[in-house]
Length: 171
Image 1 (cartoon, rainbow, N blue to C red):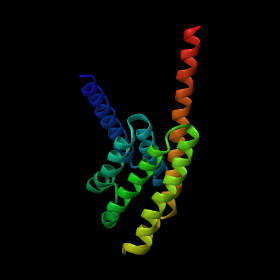
Image 2: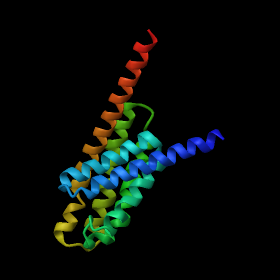
Image 3: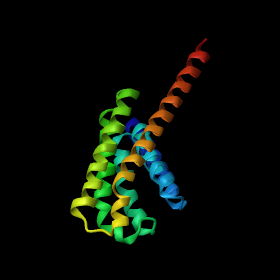
């Protein structure tokens, strides 16, 4: 019974994190805000619910963004590469999640790998209009780095605050 409760809790948290990520996308804010916020949510999801939850959110959000018109239709051929890049970011952070320093390393390495997959596809595989291809290059790297490092910082601050609260309550 304990396993089903844990599974229900993780599924519920994953669903809530997915809803928050989609809400950020739906706000229609400029990409310089939306991009880092989506990456923030991906890394935070890995930290809060595990690698599987982060990968799930990272692979479903590009499809939903395309279906509801957040992602322009000419970028449809890029969706599988965006999914792969998001999954790689989440997997890398998940594998390197033993400590805050390792999470930072995971965000840096994962961001570089995400950039290589999406930017490489935009430059060498896909045939996209120049402005669309440009959206899939260096902005992907900066968005992943900014959002990921913010998520690690926030998670560490929360963990520190909870730890400090537990220490003071024990006295």
